[in-house]
Amino acid sequence: MPEPIIYEIELNGNVGTKLLRPLIDDFHIVRSKKDVTRLIGNITDASHLHGIVTHLASMNIEIISITRPLRQDNRPESTTRQETNPESPLQSSPHVTYTKEHPND
Image (cartoon, rainbow, N blue to C red; front, top):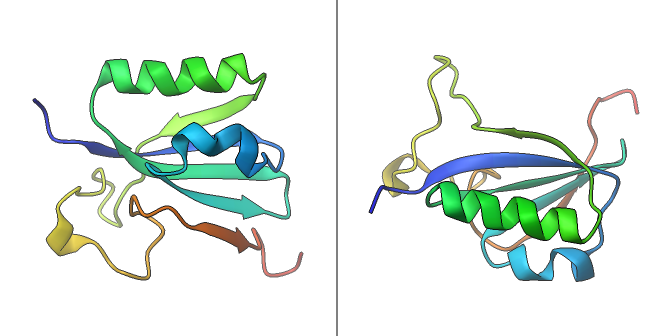
């Protein structure tokens, strides 16, 4: 089985925890004041990603984008635990965070 890859899924609106309940154990949820909800977590393979997209579509949640976050050297973020920063949202821990998109908001 391939190693999981960290993905970021952006959703339109501040999506409620009730609608995201099936995903809450696998993703770090970040909500912003710009009405965007970001899910950040490990996706194991194409069928896992398809299942997530299917769930979101069945809940009528609009997907803005699905990306692999990049490191500063423009390579995909590593999924190894040694490189995971405990303060970084690029973890698969089930936390909800509220952030400001821009300092002037």
